[in-house]
Length: 224
Image 1 (cartoon, rainbow, N blue to C red):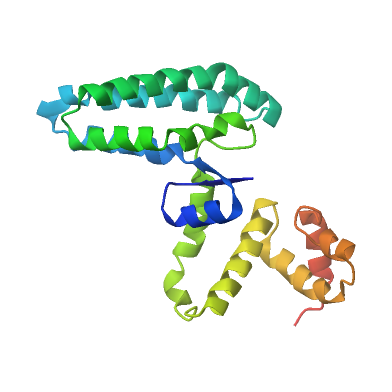
Image 2 (image 1 turned 30 degrees about the vertical axis):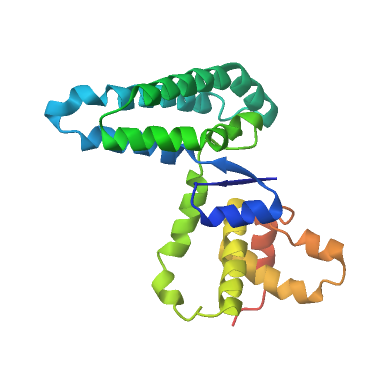
């Protein structure tokens, strides 16, 4: 399988242990070029042409993603192979040449180094129509946990951390499948103890139990 994320070192252990393919976030790589442009003073704007050209390559790649957003995974992969891969080939070849020639601005040099060091992970999404160009959705999920982290200081043991991870996974998976999390978890925790077979448990998964079914069962539960 694949692990979509940024290039943070803590992902390396999971990738190595599970033999997943890392799929890196292009938002992170693009942001480094944006920061390079912002970091240059007005009188140094002429030095921003390298970062600006990199951003233009990214504009082409992201423009295609908007065009194919509603297409099937198979069509997405075909369009990426036809359109995105040639852009990537040109982009990387240009970046290597620029890096070889030398870049004065530190932030631009850093952005190029990041791009070329993580080239394979950044363009891995082109090999599978199911994969995104960035991990923005994962970042949004992470924020729902990060904003309450001060309320979870009691999770100071491995068991507490594991329990919290399980709970947040259930909530976010329910949301990803269109459920009202409160309704879904109420039904799940009520009916799960009565599940006696794998099929019983599978039927309660949020991708099998529809939001409408969960809502009906929730409103049928005894009220406190």
